Image 1 (cartoon, rainbow, N blue to C red):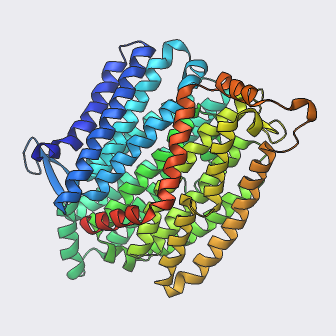
Image 2: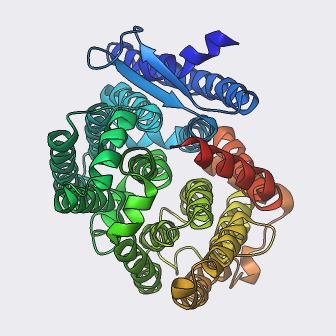
Image 3: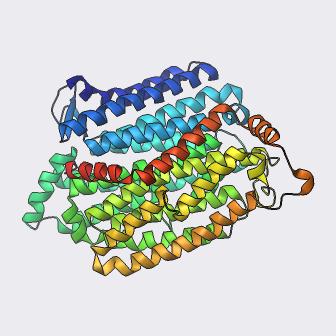
Length: 504
């Protein structure tokens, strides 16, 4: 089992190597390599998860067996291994769900480039999860940004190019603030490895040194990652980005990209600065307030949309707010709730974007409310999948979204000063979620005309004609995953809790 320690490094390098190889191949072969890569990463990350669960503590892996400052380090425990496994699974289902649209939406000569970008994105996400080095984290943040920007604009239409430019501008602002924060941290500590930097910071805090610079760098890093993950009011790039990308790109961008930045931020809070120091800096209070504002304003904007794609995109703004509200609670229970909701949002948003495509296909490509009337009858699988995703976001019992809101509510009890704002925000946000998501569900099942009645076989034929088997397979598995998160939440919450204990 000791050989399993090499798997995190192998998975990162496999992603980079696959991207290089795919750039020289045709679209068909690049697709095969990418699917093989993501499947292999899923299996290898699963093996690392089993290994760390049995081991009971985190592992530090020195690349090339050279210690710092000559070498670089990866550190992984139960939470990192679980996140890597989960992210690989979501990415595999997102690629499968939008497979047919990659062929139709992207020029054949650029199809291999799309899979190169997916390979790079997977590699960068894994690196952000596993790295124990701050500058390595920054490098892969930038790789992730470039890959995401390429995925947005690869359709080469006016909307996607404008969305890519907006995303790049906002993302580079966030990256710049993050880099300045790291530079100040290095100036204070002389270290780039997370654990080594933490030891120096702890000594400085005890000695009362560098108090103001520490506050500045924590603020810069927090704001930088908030911009990159789309926290309100830094959300302006989200609607266009998610709304006009290909289905696979929309699913990956909404479900995974912003989560990588949040995970890196949480690691810095725990492993570099120290969570006690973060709490005393009061930066969490600012994140708590912004999270609550995002929960409400993101939902308000979603209600105002007539385009289903933008409605789902603005919903992401609200859901990112949930995560930051949980972080802002400043407790282990709040952080556990935030990470669980991160998992919920990843699975549900991928499900919503992929299932929505199945509804568009049988509605003449229309994405507005009027055009989607009866779409749930014309494509039953997509209609059912979309309904499950919508009900999960509202907080329907037995689904993952319900567990998320329950965890946030119970976590707030341990923080009396923040309990009432949290409860009120959950109630208001849930009501708003119900307004726009249930309205869409009612729309896709409403107003069936007499002349538009179909037999069961006709329903099936239209669904198959509009979507591929891979699309249906991905939707079914995402529905199952959502139910698993809802019904098997105790196991996931315990896993997250154990992983957080291994973080420092």
